[in-house]
Length: 208
Image 1 (cartoon, one colour):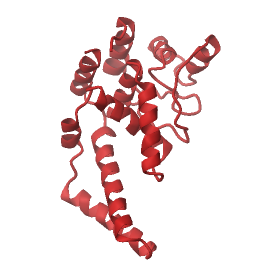
Image 2 (cartoon, one colour; image 1 turned 180 degrees about the horizontal axis):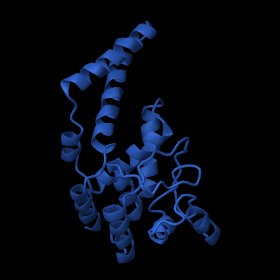
Image 3 (cartoon, one colour; image 1 turned 90 degrees about the vertical axis):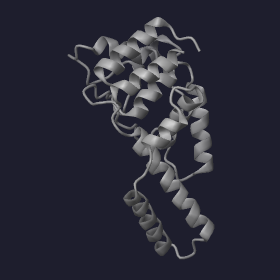
Image 4 (cartoon, one colour; image 1 turned 90 degrees about the horizontal axis):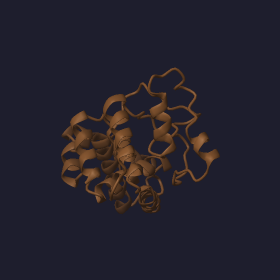
């Protein structure tokens, strides 16, 4: 998919140099972001914590393009480092794949109702990035590999859940263990700070 040079310039400026904010959106419904009129553009670009920031103009331009979003209470948190999932989500939005990401997020919540809307939102964007070839399944497998200690912690959590609910069936127990394992792998692969080398690679792939 072709991306305008202007959008790519903003991505490079903010992601490679400034850092996108990694803080999760709290209590957010899974809704596609985007602006269709002037009022919405202004509202979408209104952050309370970028006044005086030397890069405020670029941050607002990125927001107008719906590449970056508010992180709750009109805050952007410009001085915090970006996580890997934040960078991928920005690239998904920049390349026009937001609707696909939202659809995937909705399906994730259907398959796993215990998944929060925030986690489903980010997982849907990462899945859209995988579908587009921006990040690969092999990279995810390597970055999200769990240690023996981490797997033991998951089994301990499952055992606690079984003790709390003695009516839990074996199928439910196995499903819970799979869900916890998948979430822990995702968090390890994408919840950590983005490396510049990975960001450069993902941008290059997104540009195609």
